[in-house]
Length: 491
Image (cartoon, rainbow, N blue to C red; front, top):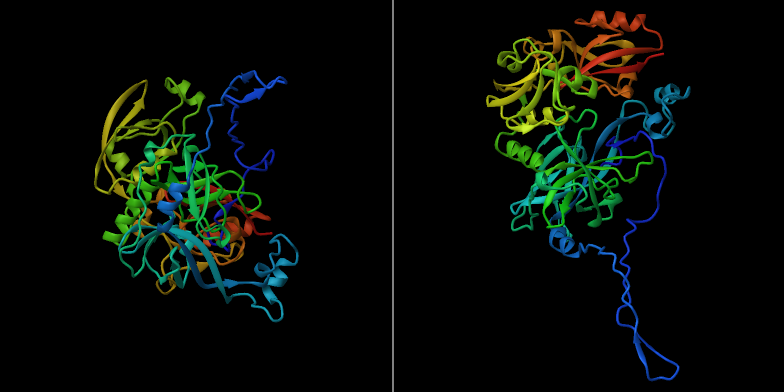
């Protein structure tokens, strides 16, 4: 996990903090103890104490076998910085703009490049040098070094990375390397013991353990990954390392934590290894990742909605809108339908559907069971391809213009992109710089649909809405298939 990046997410609330480990102690009973009487002759057997039935797991074999295939990753590069960033000045402070504009004598000022360094983990999946890690570990790196447990170091080549799943594939020039054993995360059970091996804070090949807390978790802006939640101690530097089950099989890649302090607080999230291996194969064979697209907006089915639709319980994904001309529209899906099954797999929560659709190869035919007007029916659809609206290179973005107070560069949608955006209107974010929009979380590749409730299709329209706003403007953003309102402070 790069210590200078944002992969640590703030948790909502923590009621109490607990120190120590998992509290499991092996209370050994005293069986067959001999006690002599004062006469020295009679011997009495003490009653056997009841056993707890709890035994501590031993992970030493897993550490010994899998440890050699876990690597330490160090990256170096440069990034734009400001004096405000260097001194961690609160963006809401009245001194923030002063420092970022003028800099500090003897230190880099606004817009200058400064060297950066980061640490992370990874693991070898092929004896000829293929290494998996997180995309955020190697993001923006000029050089990536991989260090093995035998102290050998190699300069790695980045084969490819997929930011939407946070998976990256590296190659090092070595052979006959130890590899991990790949498992099946779908067989993992909540409450099952798991082990993480990585380099927290640079402490190489550290082993931590815990249990799987939940499965198929969806995090903000991470709709394509059904995360496994664990309470394994994961800290900065653990990112990219393996999550291993009690059989010694890798079932996930440790990726994120929820934390208020920046360190472990009992909420860790791992990418299922089957998701990562699919990304690896696409990057190795095709050089890019292709995802399926259905063309619907969905929401969770609450108890009230289930009652109104006549469902036996809250389940499935409720279709709130269907894109015109999309695979869903051609298949006959309508707003108000509840998708209950996708390719034979039941959908308990709407958050499961994006990952299911995204994992399907574009052009493939899928079967869906839907609930409509009190009965089920089956539909078939030919899945389309999710286009990447990521920002183009600056030299190809002559049409992009700054929006002033928001501090970002945008451009109109191309003809192809209009078909992927609700209503066919909006502006693609090319660059966010370090202004108010960036601080609010807007990213390159986002599509701005509206500002303060008014749809925008031109840069001038967006500027006018921003000028009319007060201290905050509510920007409606589409990211992939998801929409969200982002409040941007401009006052």
